[in-house]
Amino acid sequence: MNFSRALPLLAATALVASLAFINHPGMAEEVAKEDPSKEFTFIQMCDTQLGMGGYEHDVQTFELAVKQINKMAPDFVLICGDLVGKANEKSFADFNRIKGGFKIPCHCAAGNHDVGNKPTAESLKNYREKIGKDYFTLEHKGYTFVVANTQLWKAPLKGESEKHDTWFKAALKSAKKKGSPVVVVTHYPLFVKEPDEKENYYNIEPAKRKELLNLFKTNGVVAMLAGHTHKLVVNDYEGIQMVNGETTSKNFDKRPLGFRKWTAKEEGKLSHEYVKLAGEISKK
Ligand SMILES: [Zn+2]
Image 1 (cartoon, rainbow, N blue to C red):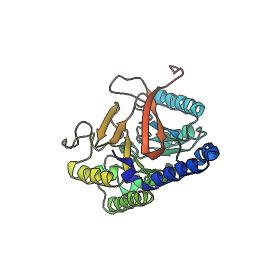
Image 2: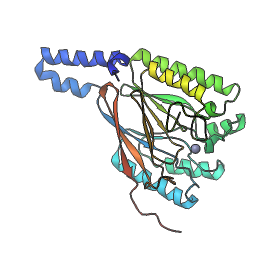
Image 3: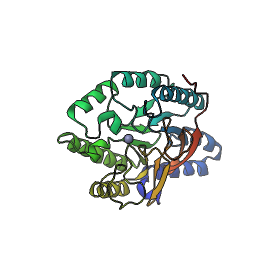
Image 4: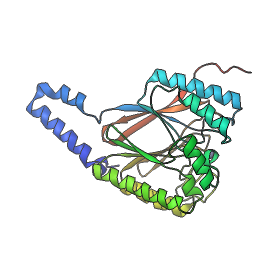
C-alpha cells in the first residue's frame, strides 16, 4: 500500500525532519526525538467475556492480563468487545473493577454480549451508563483510532445506526484531512475468510461490508482490530491488516490464552505479535 498517498501530513513532517538534518546535521537526533509520530506500542485484547470460560476463571485471567500488561507499559489497551458473557450489574461491576487496575488508559468496543445480538435503546443505555461511550475516536501520536459499535451494523437499530454511521464517516473524513493513518477497532470483523463471503454469525452482511471496505480504502485505514471469532484470524484486504486476536476467556482454535502487542511506526506501518497470558490460574 502506498502510505504516502493517504498520509500527506506525516510525509511532510518526515520531509521537514530530513531537511533539518541536511541543514543542521548536529540537530538531527533532537528533531527525531521530538517527532510525535515515532514508534509506540498498544495492546489488543479480545473477548474478556467474563463467564465464557467459567466465570471465576475469566475473572482471574483478566486480572492476570492487567498485571502483565502493566509491566509491559504500552501506551494504552484496546478491548475488542464481549467484555462480559452476560451483561448484568455484577458482570459489568467486576469488569470495571478489574479494568480499573490498568495503569495505562484502556478503551473498549461494545460486543454482542455487552449490548445484545439485537441492540435496543435499553441495552445501549445500560452499556453507556455502566461502561461508557460505545463509539468514539482517539488520536494518538499521529494515528486516529476509530472505535465503532459493530452491533449497529450487524442488527441496525432505527435512529441509532444512522447516527453512528454519520459519526463514522465524519471520523474517517476528519482523519483523512489530517493525513492521519486510521485503525478501526470493533467487535465483529467484516469478514472471516473472504471479502465476498455470505453473511453468518461471525461477519457483517455483504452490502454493508462492501460499503465499509470502500470507505476504508479511500480514507487511509491501515488496520481493523476485532474480536468475536475466539480464534486467530489474520487477513490482508488490499494492504489493510484485519486481525482478530486471542482471548483471555476461551479460544476455539486451541491456541493458548493471551493478547496481541501492536507496534505502530511512523507513516502508518503497524506490526503485531502474540503475547501468551502469564501467571497461575488457581482452581477454586
Ligand atoms: Zn461476540
